[in-house]
Image 1 (cartoon, one colour):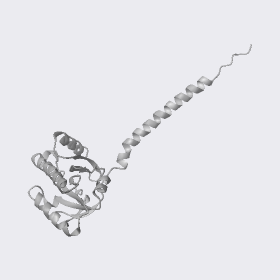
Image 2 (cartoon, helix red, strand yellow):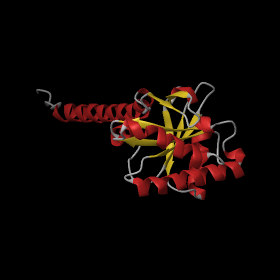
Image 3 (cartoon, helix red, strand yellow):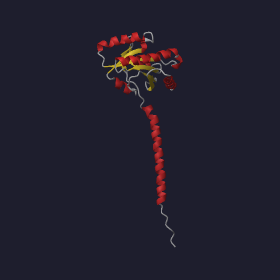
Image 4 (cartoon, helix red, strand yellow):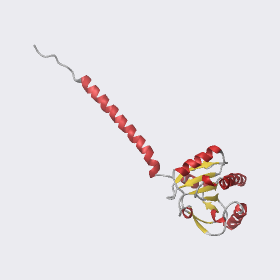
Length: 201
């Protein structure tokens, strides 16, 4: 009597299912690994800009601020003059907080820069003078300046920062990569976020 024939169809289907599930797991693992690695490979950073500080000294932004390590940049990118003044008050509020709570920063310096576009060359000196006067009793003039850029939105996008109506406090590592940022006025929650960024340096 002939032996009964057993089809391997179910066996093949099971093997195919196991193989497919294995491939899906490998693909998922690769996606997770890439999502963790890509920020390291393509971290945001500022483009270098030549400018002068409020005391008239030549300055290459952000490079000259990073010679001794990481730095914080308090940036204003106002939509108009009124909004620019609001953002300046927000960043001055942060400077006052740092003065009262120096342990927050440790040895990390803070640089204040206004980012402006479409400014005629003949008023640039006047703007620097106004910034010097505004920050004279708040921080060192060597840590205050203005960047005259072609487009404010492009400048912000390059560093991965939203361009909106709030001032921006940006933590930059010594290699020029943007570690993170907080926006707007000082709050307890933002202080904790900032501390976390500084602790990661």
